Length: 262
Image 1 (cartoon, one colour):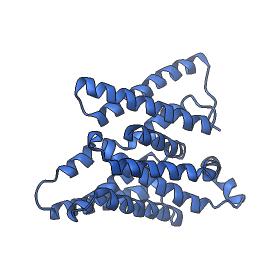
Image 2 (cartoon, rainbow, N blue to C red):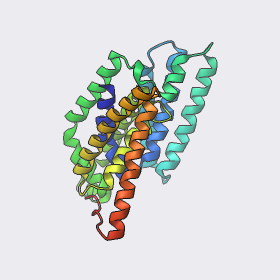
Image 3 (cartoon, rainbow, N blue to C red):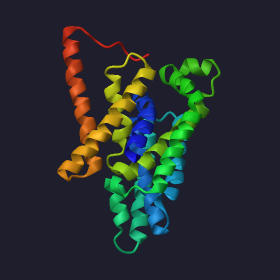
Image 4 (cartoon, rainbow, N blue to C red):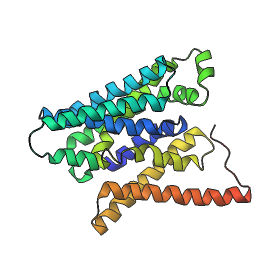
C-alpha cells in the first residue's frame, strides 16, 4: 500500500518536476529532510512530525530566494542543500549512541512502514485530489509562465503550494526508499512517460502507471532474491527508462518522433 500510494503521489508531482527542470529540487529536499530527521532523533520524537515541517520550511525558503533574486533554481537548492545537511551532521553528532533509525532513513526501509506512515501518505494523496483545481494553473505556468502572469493567475502563490506538496512527497518517500534514492520516484517515471506522451495530462497518468508497475515488480523481485526493496524498485524504474530510451531512439532514427508535450 505504501509503495502504490507514493508511486501515484510521486508521479503526480514528478510530472511538474521533470517538465520544469526541477530534478535537483527533489534531491535537495531529500537531503534537507535529513536535517529534520536528525533533529527528531536528537529530540527522541517521531521523525515524520519534525521532518515534514522542516522540509516544508526549506522548500518555501528555496522558492522565496528563487523568486526574490536572480539566482537560478540549482543555486538556491544548493545553498539550502548544504545548510540542511550541515545541520543534520551537527544534530547527529549531539545524539549519543548509534541510531538504527538514521540508517533506515538514509537507505530506506519499506518493510518498516507503519500505519501512521500509511495514514499520512493517504492524507497527502487526498489533499492532492482536493487541490485538483490548481492542477490546470500549475500546468499553465509550467509551459508559459509569462503568459500565466499576464493572465493574472497567482503564479507565485501556486509555486509555494507546489513546493510544499513536493516537500511532503519527498519526506514520505524517504521512509520507502531512503534519502539517497527518493528522487527516483519524482524523476524517473515522469521522465519515462515524457518520452511517449503527447499531452501533459497523458504524461502524468502514464508516469503513475509506470511507477505502480515498477513498485509491484520491484517488491516481487526483492522478495524472490532477498535484496533491498527500495533499491530494487529503483532498478525497475531505471530499466523501464532505459528500455524506453532504446525504443524511442529507434523511432527517432526511423523518423517516427513523439511530438513535444503540450
